[in-house]
Length: 54
Image 1 (cartoon, rainbow, N blue to C red):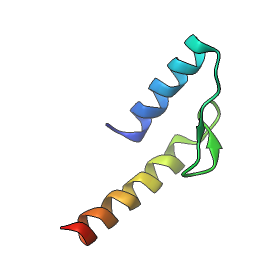
Image 2 (cartoon, one colour):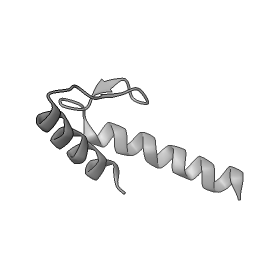
Image 3 (cartoon, helix red, strand yellow):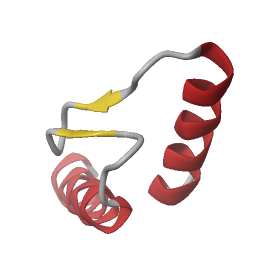
Image 4 (cartoon, one colour):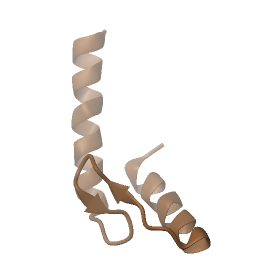
């Protein structure tokens, strides 16, 4: 799953439940957060995992 998809799902859940999500990895709310920032962070973690754990 891409970070952008996760944020879209998170925003749908927020709308349906009336709750607010927060992405602690990049310290931003899901509703108004920058998806590009979250995707870049996730990409860095994925690269580190692939290089370090394989």
